[in-house]
Amino acid sequence: MTKRESKSPIKNLPVRQPGQSTREKFAGLFDDEIMPYFIVVAVVVVLAIGEWTRFIFKSPPQPWLMSILAVITILFLVRKMQKTIPLARQLRLGAIGEEAVGQFLDEKLRPMGCQVFHDILGDSFNVDHIVVGPTGVFAIETKTHSKPMKGACNVKYDGEKITVNGATPDRDPIVQAKAEARWASDLLEQSTGRRFFVQPIVLYPGWYVDPMPPNAEVWVLNDQAVPTFIRNARNHQLSPEDISLISFHLKRYVISRDQQAK
Image 1 (cartoon, rainbow, N blue to C red):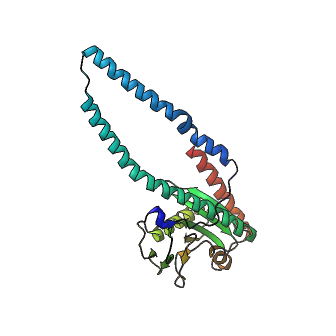
Image 2: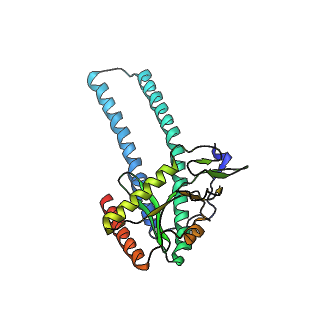
Image 3: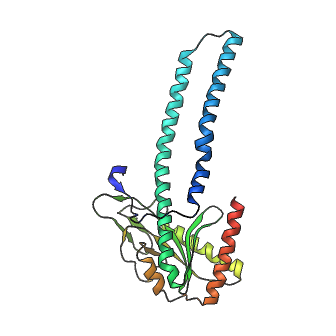
């Protein structure tokens, strides 16, 4: 699907975060202020080495050799860009989706007495959002897919597999959501000494998601449906003390893991 044939599913773009300008400046500092000069210096050094080599060994110019190397380098760069640009677009869309969903969850769920944690790091993965509230603990995996400009835009879930406009995702979101919820439950048991059930959710912002089968192990929803499902959950209700206990240990883990990653 080309860029002209698709669109972002996110209608309400996320607002800027505290300190975002500073983070953006820090992230772009090396690329904007150092890398261009590094490239110029590297090119000049290579040219200088070439000239000294010709001077010392009295070697004649070799335009054909340099031209072949230039063509090889250009082809390598083009191939690299062909792989990188779609990935960059996908990452950017995913980041916007996670930020928008995060802000939406904060807005809708915190007034319900829920605590919302974002981007919880594991060993080689992350959980996009964990919600802790009166009706339980929920681990949310956000899947932001571009939508076709025209035609159907729906997600189907038969209780085992997901299809997005008829296509099966490369990476099974159900398996991923189950693993993340199980990891979150294990983490809470290790830190609190108690076992809490964590409901896995796969969330498709901006898409129409067909109704799930009754008693589906994993919930597959769009962003607008999540607050209602969480509010109406009844099987794993938590006391205010449990909410405080879980939130305390999750916050401590998030802070500790973030410090380790720096």
